[in-house]
Length: 396
Ligand code: CTP
Image (cartoon, rainbow, N blue to C red; front, side, top):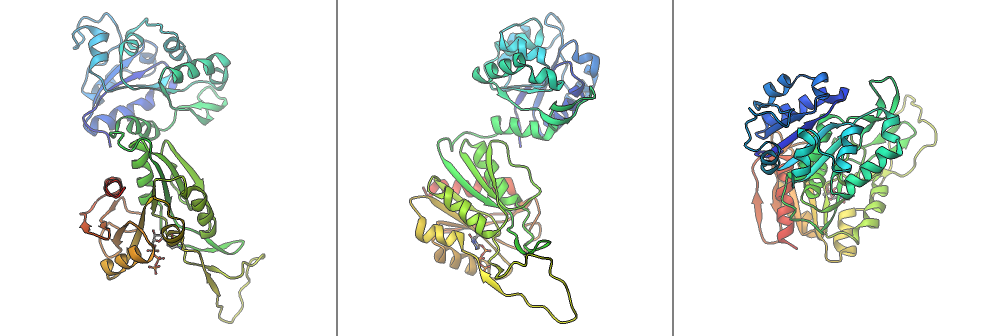
């Protein structure tokens, strides 16, 4: 979550300008100061009053507005911000920024600013795909801008294709990735597993568990925000890959095993948050299994224990963290896992703890190493993820 940041939200003249209102609202509610700067065309789509009401700050559109609250117009604004985000960014403003043109309050301020700059292009597909626009985007990326790619879909002009402004939550995530954390994990490679696995019985059925992947995704996101290069091996979940994270999708425990072993050698830290199925059916029926009146039994065979394999056989200097979700005797079971699986750290949590189970946004983990046990209180999974990473960094 972003807090106490000063963000210049640039809004240019496209129909997606209304989506910026949600962004301005969220950033303000979370304790950031949002200065909104609109181009003249943007004010045709949404009234500055909307943003003034949402941010509690005066909206600026005119470079020569003498009543603006900052002392020397665009220069003082440029100096006081932590980041500038232009969403939506039209083809026109991208072209101007790519060539250093500064003919209104927004472009003069951006040119003067020396902070992270993000642009979220949104326009008709033809305009977006036009080589001129693509060249301008390339140029902006070379100048250090973060370009938040537009999404595919139905566009206001009636066309379908690339050009839609991403959902405000996605844009927020990129801003969070840019500004949220000190980059203390730069240069580190982190491998994370998350989510459940599925073991097929037949073409329509599978064995699985209640994991939603939230804890592992939170670890991947936290590590990426701290500057690490993150690979996330994920079982089936409903979650989007965090910004900046390379995701590898797998279904079964065996697929997860191969994906993890393929990437383990390159990793500095490995976090095994996935709820891996311990067993799979010996036989997968090619056709749908039909019922009859008798009882039905399934013969299962063991899946590889990925964590154990990493800890005992493949370990080559990586710091390895496993998870243990228990319903009873948490510490005892978790300590056993630490030793048996050759992990450096076990993040243990009890299903008996309220708001710390599958699918919740919070967790209460106990961090267990061979030397100590640290009981953390209930916190968001994002905070817990940072605490786990902090602990792993001390074990490096
Ligand atoms: N794990 C794994 N491969 C498996 C099973 C588990 O890598 N086949 C990892 C999990 O990702 C987790 C840790 O081992 O980091 C503990 O998983 P958990 O399901 O709590 O324990 P199990 O080893 O399966 O033991 P049990 O089910 O008996 O509690």
